[in-house]
Length: 370
Image (cartoon, rainbow, N blue to C red; front, side):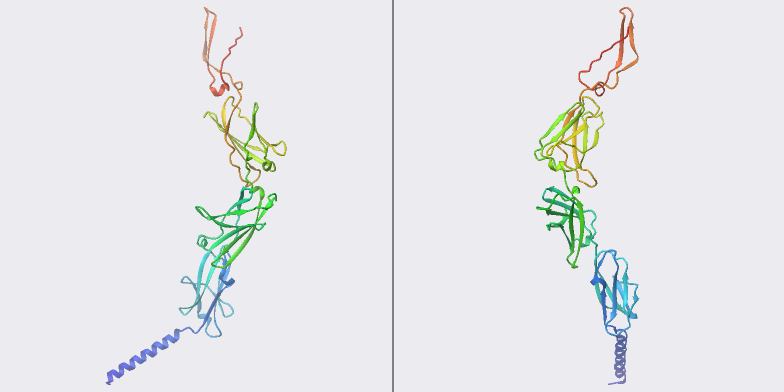
């Protein structure tokens, strides 16, 4: 072996030794452990903490850092532990916090931020007596839609699974069977449950709704109402209207004239006459225009805020009574001529139109003082 070859072998040995020494300088002396508060299940808007420390006594935690998505976080050292505090967490399926030592990732922990269950727009309606149809806006963000489910229960213990309303991903719909439940209570108590399966988290919320906000006024099944027309009003009477009789109703009456010259009329009227325990009578006044046809639509709801309107009662029409015109015809300017030979006075005027004369078979009588 020549001198040149020996020198090459020595050079390679020195290079290998230098490389080994450099590697030893950056090899982590810390066996890191990292953890998150609340087992990594945080709430939206709440605070959370991630901690990183060296197992045992080896390593200098001052060489440790915490990163999220490649960004180094602002930390502090408390009790020989690197601590990061998130003051207000935003909703996410998963954040992975990594603990680094001198540019090397050592360990990580995953955190899920769950929406707080705080539904404020739960609405329900008895479409039929023992079937309660409810809906609300879900609490969680879109990325949770596949991993979160909801249940709604009434005080009797009946529970309904909730599904997304068609075409409204953020709106949930629940159908509950309330057979045997006390329908006459002034309020109805609900328990809403949000279950995040992938995270293993469950939240519940207690909600009460007034019964009146869920009751939909229905026309008696017979639909056989008696209609009575007097000089200035129309009255409708429904038999077997016990459910309607129990409640304080408010009505909307829409009067649509057949003649476009007449403006439509909308009336909001209270109550209804409760003549006995079975019959509900409701009356509305006629418009002032005489001998005119109006199409009538009416509906009702329980008086109060956020109550549900009934369907429109089947449309019908009324004809108002003929009345005396509200004004006389107007004479034309210089609207007369006098025939001296025959001692006759001819008078000219603008006739009333059909709306003004308020009745059929319009005739005029002219009187003069001689």
